[in-house]
Length: 115
Image (cartoon, rainbow, N blue to C red):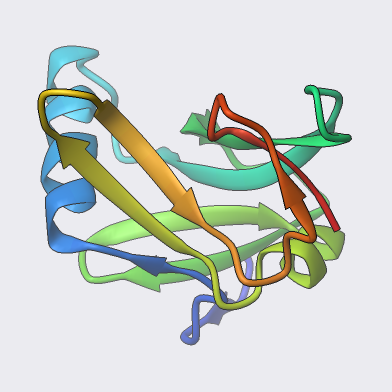
């Protein structure tokens, strides 16, 4: 079993947790599926965010955020340290938002950045 690291490098707001729990329930996912937070190459600014439920990979660090298990590949914390994941529900925007202090540029889509 993997060691669980207590300090998650990102903040997940209560409204985002509520939506993530709703998604987990709708998709009928078991407790082996944790929340994957990360980055991948691509997008209009160089990187795009990864947020979704997944099974643990060998290269993951494991975190606990309340009752939720969070998986993050070891090298991704460098790009995400201090980021806030929120859920917005307004007239102009509905969905997850990423407020990343490490981003030197962002794109209008809100899910792409460069660091």
